[in-house]
Length: 129
Image 1 (cartoon, rainbow, N blue to C red):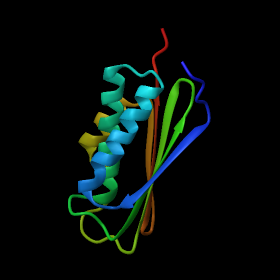
Image 2 (image 1 turned 180 degrees about the vertical axis):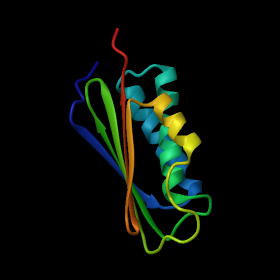
Image 3 (image 1 turned 60 degrees about the horizontal axis):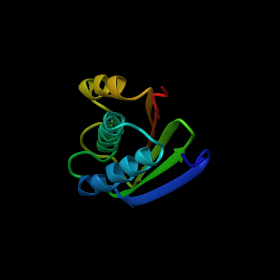
């Protein structure tokens, strides 16, 4: 396997739920490059979807969503940041069910909010036999 430790990919897009597929596919492609199993790749896609959806909501938000994917030899670290002109309606945060799902599919995750800026971080480590 190619040594990819330290490589970084950045994706910025409008904060709409219709574009979350791009975030999932990017995560899946990078996880595959790291040698993750099919199940581990699915876990990453689920986690990205849950956390991105917590940021943009069901109707989207005015602003942008930036994801930074960092590749390690045995881990994928994804930082997400939504910078919105306003946050109206539902309170952006993972639901209790989402938090349980995230705990089951990734090694670490967090979600923070500072005014109209919201961030998340997730870490998925590849099982090494």
